[in-house]
Length: 132
Ligand SMILES: [Zn+2]
Image 1 (cartoon, rainbow, N blue to C red):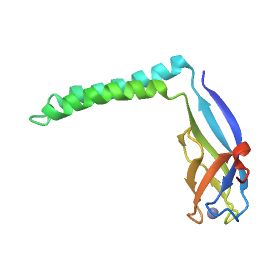
Image 2 (spheres, rainbow, N blue to C red; image 1 turned 90 degrees about the vertical axis):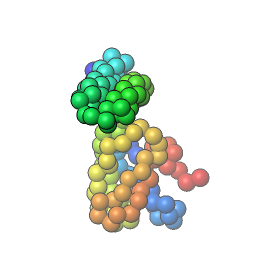
Image 3 (tube, helix red, strand yellow; image 1 turned 60 degrees about the horizontal axis):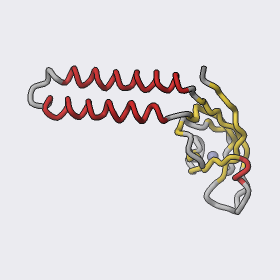
């Protein structure tokens, strides 16, 4: 069973003079059997594409080995993904409007764009949000 954890975050601009605003993101963490199942589903999809490409003349010389190689990469990559950011929200430090945090990999600091003023934002865990 996957776990969904809400994490408080600080949202900052690249401009250090602008004070950060607060928000939260939701992190989903998968157990090892769930990761294996997700990786298997993705690998079966690319394997299916490889099988379909067998019937495409000439292009199958490149597509079939390409999709089989991609199957291995997708399976190994999928098994190593332990968690991801599945959403969240906060207020923009520049325009103060509420915005949604997009789905992304669990790599900090997160990067996002305010949907109202299009300014790029960096999202830090609150412990790391202190000015250095
Ligand atoms: Zn904004």
